[in-house]
Length: 89
Image (cartoon, rainbow, N blue to C red; front, side):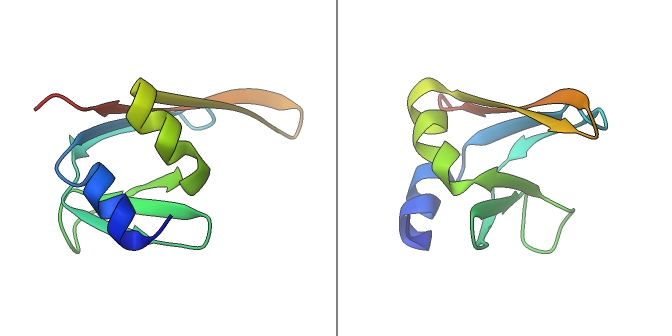
């Protein structure tokens, strides 16, 4: 996906993210997007906060279904990561 496509798809929508490994969560309206190699990093506004990394491959599912889940394992401990996109404004 190109940066332009990602911006058109995500800009202005509300995202929530939960990382089961460390229990962190975040929730905000997307105001700034930076594309990394395999992910899009979204922020509430430019220069504010750490942001949320969204895998590029997850964006189509996230926009169509409103949710994307992935299960991982680190040092034998399973955990889940969840992204939710609120499409209705």
